Amino acid sequence: MAVKRIVANIHAADAAAAQAFYGGILDMQVVMDHGWIVTLAGSGGGNPAPQLSFASEGGSGTPVPDLSIEVDDLDEVLRRVAAAGLALEYGPALEPWGVRRFFMRDPFGRLLNILMHC
Image (cartoon, one colour):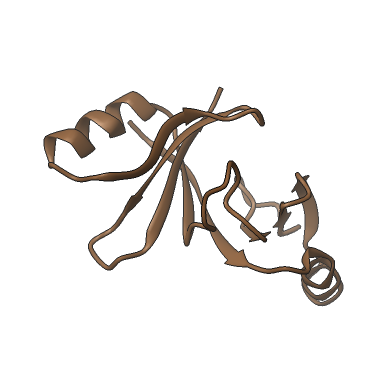
């Protein structure tokens, strides 16, 4: 199992303000826009490029998670979570925007969105 990318999620009611600020000041470009969430990526050529997401909700009626962590094997992560006796707060769910995911909390109380693109 490998982590493919980690994106910080910021609760924001006005994604356009985030686009104007981060695009205008830091040249970040929109790489995803679902209306309720907009993801901006840096233009420095990294692979994957640094990303920030601004969301009014977490999708499917969930709260905005603190971090989204994309993995290459969601079933293996779910197995490890179960073996550790940790609770899920949402999912696992196959979402209409093409990801399979679940939410859980880290030891510090941060809400994590663990996902895999389908």
